[in-house]
Image (cartoon, rainbow, N blue to C red):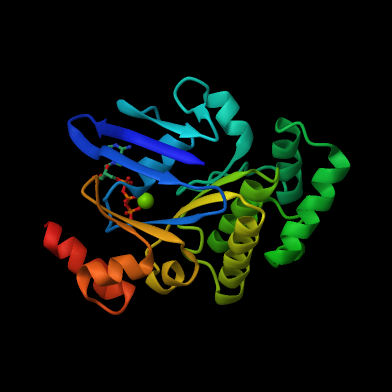
Length: 240
Ligand SMILES: Nc1ncnc2c1ncn2[C@@H]1O[C@H](COP(=O)(O)OP(=O)(O)OP(=O)(O)O)[C@@H](O)[C@H]1O
Ligand SMILES: [Mg+2]
């Protein structure tokens, strides 16, 4: 379970995330939606201990991100917005490296890499150096890395952005599978049909504030709109 309390971050004087609050239950898929520059990536980076909040806190499965970031890192899988891969390593070597950091056995890393690469149609690239990969392929390798150590919490920043239809479907299936295993998933997206399809609850963030939060049907009745795109536009326009 994730508990976010008054989480806040500014860059110089620019307030990027402004005292936000929400909870996500185990086995819940939580969508973070918002226009460009709304604060989604900043939120994900604070939750994944990459960025230290100025104020407030986030507790992940009972562990505080500020007090025990290293403990948090053990139980989370993260897809950052900017995919950073080690250029000189092959995809399999990089996953081996990450798996070892998480204390995984070499044989298990290899098996798990093959399962994930098979799902994501990456087997052709298992011996390719990261520097030679296309943008979407890099993103998929980064998704495999996020899932590698079977984390109980996943933070995915626009997981299907720039991804082909088949692989986007595979990623959605991986998220739904993670939900079945009672994992907690927060992901950000600009793809409304995707959020509509797989999210249990959705938060809409605009200019660092959560302006609405609820199930799809709650958001629809709140705005008297029929689909999420209309709901989203209505809420964001009301707020600006
Ligand atoms: N490293 C940084 N330095 C200064 N300002 C930043 C930095 N990162 C983000 N910001 C600012 O913080 C605000 C929130 O940015 P953030 O990246 O969290 O938005 P986002 O919702 O993820 O947007 P997008 O949909 O474009 O990915 C923006 O105004 C952005 O310009
Ligand atoms: Mg972003």
